[in-house]
Length: 548
Image (cartoon, rainbow, N blue to C red):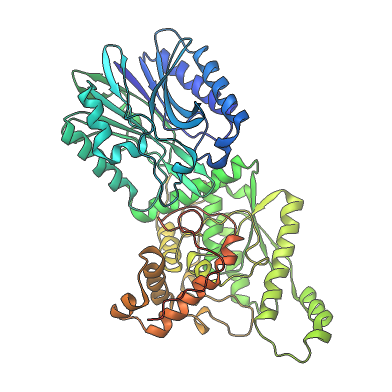
């Protein structure tokens, strides 16, 4: 039996586009002699659907799309594809077997993930344990994504005669996920003595990016096939005498990327798809001369091409010549357009206008925020006029403690580095300067000037300002943030690890006090299990603090 694995990039709700992509690959695979053509979890509808799945009209259109596929596939070939299905008042995460003119519900997701970014118990009913299907005298089990994380579903399918397992997945990227997936699949294959194929979605969807990386193992858990990460790939394999073998060695990729590479590729693909699927083609970045905007600009150029990235400097009287020069050097290295709009006159006029109300009050952070909001106003105007999506540039450390101005530097449509702590911003910037790959659309070499990487971080909203005026050094701050956010440690836990009690409590207070800002922030790509949005959900107003 020849099986065509379709590791492809759907768009949520674009049923016509997803059907077109399906039928195109079906026809090509049929010409290549495929007997069975398989797609990932929820490929037809896109994933995750969230509350869109509750729309009766949407589910009706999904059914029509399934019928359209069934009426247009060649005779003698079978298709396995994922989509939602409503039955007897309940909605199921389903996997369909389609033959010419015939649609069979072959599997329903049994284990529904309800943690981190997943909330499937809100949307779907629990399905049956898992059916098996017959194709070309082979018996196939199709556990859907979460179903392979527990022993029971695969065991059930093997008990009922499955001699190969093909698992459709919609598994988004997070750091360390590749190794975890492989561990689980090896366990299932080894304990059941059955070969397994893990087929994953690829592409960005809101804050999530599906990284592909589909693979297959034999009955002993040894990997026999590995498809590329973060790329669409259609790959043919043969299943004969219990053995999976590749029929196209050119599209396999048995190497693994390091953590920096995976994070960077995830940010680029997530941005590329968010812009493209939102019907934009260009982006706009306020280029400060600092490390955060420099990395965002580099990601944008690698994802979209330098011709689609517009950068703007917005200097005030506090902006250093070094920062202006660094921004110019960066834009030239990236080969993208750079404009300059001074905010000095506008800032002076606003302060003059407010002087009757402010004259008896000392200068403080309010005046700093005015500068940030002027920049936000001007950037949004340029964004609207040029039809370019404005990108925000706050890293996870700043987003965590609220070191950003609402309606100012938080203005924008997407934030590629929202889940990247400041120390990782430096690390990945250095990595990008030393690494270049064919998929990058930007230039090779040291695109981020060393001066930007070396200089102390500063918002430059007052004379001689640095971030460390009011925050601990990022090497310390990020470890505290990782403890409080990623690991849910207590103040006492962190104190035992050598951190100052008062500093930890200050950081905790900043995190909780900034929740309202995060609720109004642009989405950004999910890199960790505790990303700000679906990965970590806290009330805006809450009075609990760790008193220890």
